[in-house]
Amino acid sequence: MDVLQGDLGAFAVADVLQLLASGDKTGVLRIETTVFTGRIYFIDGYITYATTRDVDGTVAALADLQEPSVRDRRGRNPGGKWPRPARPLVLQQTSEVLIRLTNDGSGRFWFVDDVRTRAYGAAEAERLDVEEVMKAADERRSEWDRIVRALPDPSARYAMRQHLADGVDEVEIDADSWSVLAAIGAGATTQELAERLSMFELSSAGLLADLYERGLVSLEYATDPPEVVPVGVEADH
Image 1: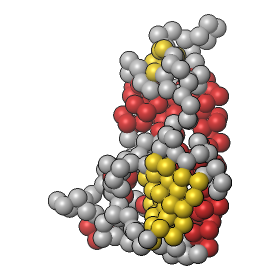
Image 2: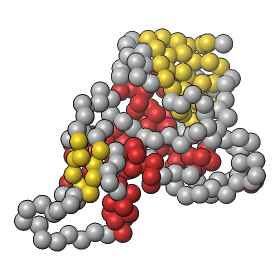
Image 3: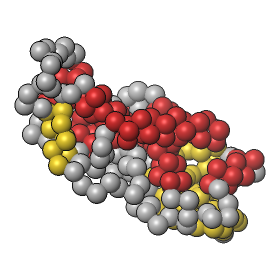
């Protein structure tokens, strides 16, 4: 049953989240903007998961962004345990989904009682405080602002420079930077780089921005700047 619904032009998403938290609600908040459609799940007023994909996916797949997960033949983690703490990964996913759903400022929302995510399978769901999620989203949004200032066009492809900039005779490349350059290869967008390195797009874009500022990669070709800043590769598929 829908217990809360409205227009995003009249109600801020943050206010809706805090209202659901204060009411100890369990269910799913569905948000539709002109760009994205997403779902934010709650249990007893705590956020448990969020996605902008058509299906929830699994937290095990989300963990694959960091390292391979150990699962049984049915794809579940033995004993309901993940290969590393799931909480920081779920927090990253949820905060980036929140950025996607609040960039537009227009659309509609509605809350449905007693609907839970299937992302955890039989394992116990992580519970995130709304304030914690909003703080994480603000921090990640600030990082995206820095990246956008560094990269002329986040949707464009970048390639390793064939020659160093004038006046630069040598550069020092650490192991992390070398792996990024190798992943870029003949060229890559921030999203393609994230997929090749199995990481969130924010992380890959930050690495790419650092290399661009150091003059190690160049813009291969530009496209029209996107209307919405890209925010994270979701691995819930």
